[in-house]
View 1 (cartoon, rainbow, N blue to C red):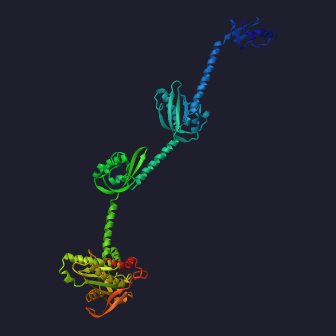
View 2: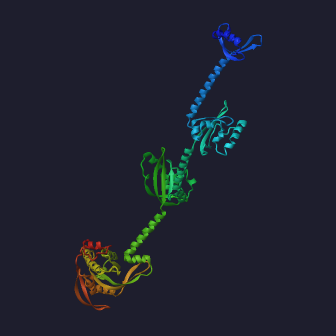
View 3: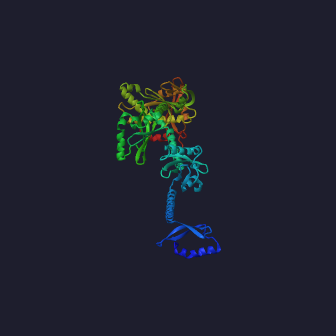
Length: 579
């Protein structure tokens, strides 16, 4: 009657079978069955049966499972929900770019994500259930549990809710830098740690720092002073050379306006120049070098070369200036200019090879030369002429005519010894190595001197036309440098005296020479025998008049092989006409 319809039909058969056979199927056991109430509703229950001795009675105990079944269903549902939430959390954790560890208050790992396995090298099941100190390097791992114990006792948070950089250890024992962030779930008592491997970031930072330090070393190694300024002209960086050149320390430079290194007149206008460039974009100094004046800390100024360039750094402009102190270079250039001027003057008054010898050895220079040609030229009637001229007119006249002669000296590469009043003395270069054609060059020079005089006379000189006597001799001379402040390369000897006598005993407008000159000059010249004259200090001498010379052949010039001035000689014929 209290059994569900299916159980009720079979119940009498269960009892009859037990009485007949004695086989106990449910006696002494418990089983779950369906029972029926008076109203016909059924419910799950647990039934237990036992036999009451030999009385033949059977006792049954029934417990209603309706409430238990409902509670179990709720528990199953809740368990399923927990599993679903856990799976969701794991999915979220596994999607993270950071390694995530969840530990309890005993520091035992409860959860890890896939990134943790990737970063540390362990499998998930190798981590879960183990102490979190397995991922810590020696020296930290052994103390970690005490940190947790201290936190649980005191509630003092050192790490929780913060981020800091620490070191961690992989399964293979390697140590790496990481960022650790820790948070706590109050309800569960679990602690969650987020770990970011910063090995690559640290390497990049180290590389950047190394490059920055290298750049700073390169900048500091520069010999030139370097300044970096911003758009307002404020100094942001200087190198070591800047402090050496200007006298300020790096600390004194940084934050100051660049105008502190400029003389007052430029400093007052510099910000205006910079502002105008930023407005107009017109470059006066950018990308160029120019010489300017700069000012040191002590107020002294010095010349320098300034080069400027512009750097666009994420939209803000910076300007880099390189400054090179050229004080020494300027001094060297000035000294070089003075030396060159001195050398030029020296080469103007001395033959080149004698000037070089004097520079190398300023002691006395005196040499004997066996084959030097000497020329003297003198204005006929000079004393009477100049007695009625003003000093100014005398100097102007002599300067005009002697300048023409000087030009010819350069053309023929001769040595002008000196002028004494109206006397003009020229020789071939006194050098044994150079004297293979000295006599012929002096003879051509003498002929062109006469052309120069005629050219002068054609200008209609104010005090009338002039005329020259010219004498030439060749032979042995002693030549040397005399004087210490005004050097003179002078000559002495019999040939010098004879040349002077040739001029003194000569004829106006004529070139009188010795027999030795005729023999040395060569076949390109025409001489006319004048006769025998009584020459003071020499007695009777045969003398000749130089009349003319063949034109220089461009292929067979007497000056061929004399590299410095052979081309000048070839041009001389046409140039003389310009006098």
